[in-house]
Amino acid sequence: MKKYFSIFFIVFIFILIGFQQIFACSCMQTPNPPCRSYGNTPVIFDGIVTEFAPIENNQNGSQNRRAKFKIENIYKGNLKKEVEIFTGDGGSDCGFPFTVGERYLVYAYGDETYLSTSYCSRTELLEKAKEDLDYFAQLPSLKNEVTIYGSVKKYAFGYGDDEDFGLTKPLFNIPIRIKGQKSSVVRTDRQGNFKVSGFPAGTYSVELLLPKRLKVSIHSRTGEVDYLKIPNKGCAEVKYYIDFEGKISGRVLDENGKGVESIDVQLVSADYKFEGKNDTATMLEWDVSDENGNYSFDGIPPGRYFLGIGIGGAFDVFGEYGQIFYPNATKPENATVINITENKELINYNLLLPKRNN
Image 1 (cartoon, one colour):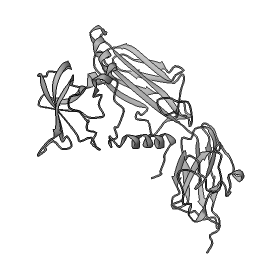
Image 2 (cartoon, rainbow, N blue to C red):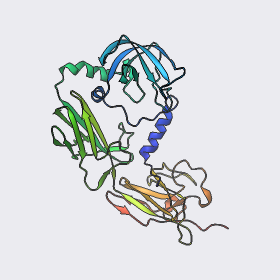
Image 3 (spheres, rainbow, N blue to C red):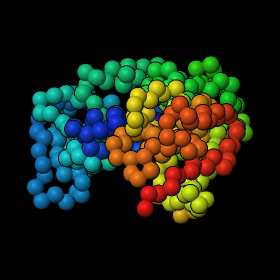
Image 4 (cartoon, one colour):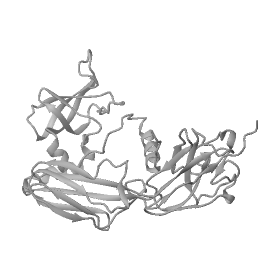
């Protein structure tokens, strides 16, 4: 299997590492907005934690901690004045780290006999839950309808400074087909957003209708078609992340023209100013050559790039070949700049290894 990493993934991993001192878990997706979480969560309340401790002789798998709450307000579900909520230990199980004496808004799953929550829900300190409380307050005045909204963005290295770590750019005028109890085709605005309201509660399919030159990214949590079950007065958010169809491929060859396997091939920005021997740029993409020396990169945003070996990432050991810039240069000033454009496939970009010293 090819090793395919975008800069988005690399930055994301660094950010996760920063959080791992507190949480070692990785949620499959960010918490849904309040209007969707409200419909998908059986019990919601706020209250003060009176006890929080490990469970002795735990029979609940990873839910090995129990928090006892004195309830202040109930927003959904049938509860008594006090309730027990189970969660994990705060490691890879995504357990929520409650603190005794603090007041929380809790999204709990299960039934009255066993309720649990996690860091991946919208459970939060009450003082940080203004968005949720505002939604609950307006529920009585909301019409009996649902809203579907979202965004379509494409990866663009170094673009802007948005919630996606400056790595995406909005796509304008992309059609989205929504089908269900009511159907519509809506297009994204100049910020890449779309929204439809006034639909009845029910099940809907949301289909992204992309031009041929674009495709849904492997890093997108949503495929081209998403299926949503939306309760009355609820909503659903759908975020699409798109890759360009720009491609580049080739082989790593030895002095005899034979393919060489297990060589790390990197793609970096041609705008990087290398300083001295063995300086390395930020690695944007990388792949490992297969048994025939083949490598490939897919979904590359348009731009100017250097292709090579040992030129990107935190490399301090360059092996027997040192640094090589496409096609066989040892210095960046002698390297060939590769221009990648949308919907363009570059093939036979072969990297030539120097002759070994026997």
